[in-house]
Length: 166
Image 1 (tube, one colour):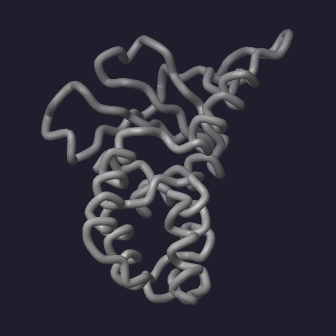
Image 2: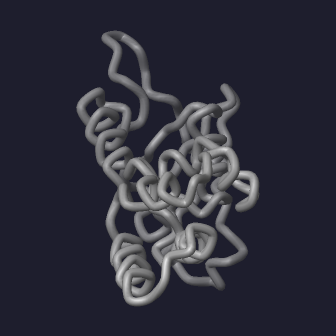
């Protein structure tokens, strides 16, 4: 929401000031302001309060933030497009003469939050430090393989609410 940066500047606050008051990293605030990260509605409400934004502009901006929650950010789309183009969405990168990893003995884990349903994502931690991910509905289907670094970045983003739908 580019309007957030303009409102912050009009209120005479720096990005560091706002990030500190929110308990967030400055980079998270910056990505929220430039569209690289979809801002959480409670964070937008907090920022609007700091900036002294009153109704009806406040309600309009909160409605806009709520509507944005279901859409991927520009950065998420760009990352997906880049990884898809490079073949990184597939298990391993095909290399002539190289075999794909054998996942027949992989210990797939199901989240305790799935409540016994068969519609969840299952990770398996691999001996090389990577993580394989599959859908529990199709255990013999496609598998995505990530490096440990990619997996850690995803978990940090999930914990920060970057992928929340509401």
